[in-house]
Length: 286
Image (cartoon, rainbow, N blue to C red; front, side, top):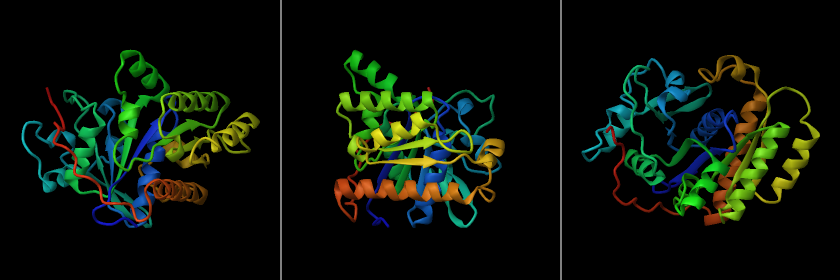
């Protein structure tokens, strides 16, 4: 799917909290791995607000806390720090998260997306899915008022980045998504290679306002993908994938195809080799 020197970056961002962002990142990473690319999820959220430590519990990976902030890192160090995320009928892939006990002191995780990219480049992964916790529209407005590049822009401007923008498939969710898209458009961000994802909160036909909003968004983004409601995820999270509905897996496959199509439309197929990231501090524990 990707050459050994290529690196596709997929920042999974959200209009608001509760948008299914981590679930989308998980299922997308599984599809990219199944397509033959070495894949990692970067968990950029603080440990006690992230589902990833519990989803990867029971492994002996060192996690982000094992990476020394004041010394150069090797590929083997970074690979050992990553937990394996197994899946049914698909290859395993890896997750870099802070898996320490809840009472451990918080890590000072880097804010700069370029630092996370450097970490993934050292690890040698071809597909980098970043689970990011910041609300998009607020981040864009805050950074504009401060005269700085915010996290959303910094993620979108990384080499070969295809953003995935999530929202719940409700009236309030589609409103938040439209607001985020307007903010991204006003700030000149790459909507033409952004894939929007609407995550259903219940079974049944989507509300009319959501269907109408999705039609409007399809003209402004690379694609709009609908993720169906899955009772297993609602009840158990994503500790196992063996009981997920087939349509959930199909939606993940469609999302992966749309992400790859957006990358191909933007930079050609095959994706060019990734540039070597400039040296940056990766993780600071102070």
